[in-house]
Image 1 (tube, rainbow, N blue to C red):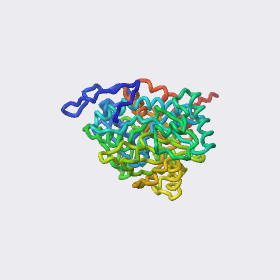
Image 2 (cartoon, rainbow, N blue to C red; image 1 turned 30 degrees about the vertical axis):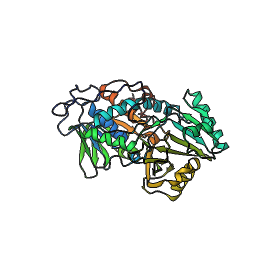
Image 3 (cartoon, rainbow, N blue to C red; image 1 turned 90 degrees about the horizontal axis):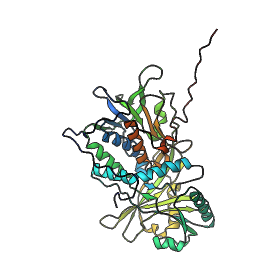
Image 4 (cartoon, one colour; image 1 turned 135 degrees about the horizontal axis):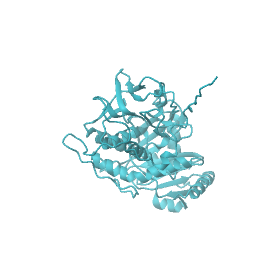
Length: 431
């Protein structure tokens, strides 16, 4: 299905365009943008993954002039992501703020997808499948029950079911499975399709531009407390913006060398995903997550194509490692070993792609999202393993900032300056 999830956030009709491509809306009164000179964007987004393009699309929809700066938009974490929208099954001990943020964004996905599909004319692969979690052995089942107790304490919709009930939902579940859990509200979307739709929506706005260059540092006016005014690319070209949204993933922190007031400790966390080609007999239709001797694994089936074949994504490894774009034999082996322990039929599928990429981690695994103490600088980075899930709430944050409205409460609760140095107040010495 396309964008049919229920949500408390209704879809907004596609924007009407004038003869010059304008939306016909008055410019909102939030972030500064009035009287900018020609050649200066209202919003400059540094980074063109799903987070950066979501921010750019919302600014474009609000009638702003937008420039996106990225050498290969969508080729980072977005390209590898499986697209699970899973605040419940991602819930973990000590991460209640992440849960609130993820749940808020998951509730926005239906409206976000419907609006994006209307704007772009492209589907995004949003599917209300629910998620089945399998425990391989007794120890895995005990761990699953501890997590289930946490989910219950937090009021999340997750239920332990019998293995027989799991096989009723998915007959391909293997014989050596000790237990199962069902989360009906955890769904999926196709990240590559979402990125294509965001790209297409921006391409339809003559005031939006995507520049295929790498930012090397941010620019700011001279003087203490001066605003950030743009970014310098790797060809030595300056790109100016009334507001700069830093959405460069794991590279974000390095771009702030000239902005000592803001510290964004993003780091690369490498993961590998596999893409398999499944023939029509492979009827897996739900997202399957698993714990195999303490190791997490997931299997995400896409909607079948006209020939009955479907893409199946298996992931994901996680290691503190730079973005070398090199898959490891051990990582591929481990994913296939654990996935086939739960779904033995995977053995018969063709392995068509191995995708190693890095996610942008932060010390507390929470994103850096919102305005900073430096005028003109907004952070939208550090989304770690949930960039796809958090795209709608990131877009809602941009909407609020542009309109001068309050941030979503789950965003407002996470300070984007929490790692930055605290300004030291100086007092005048008297004699």
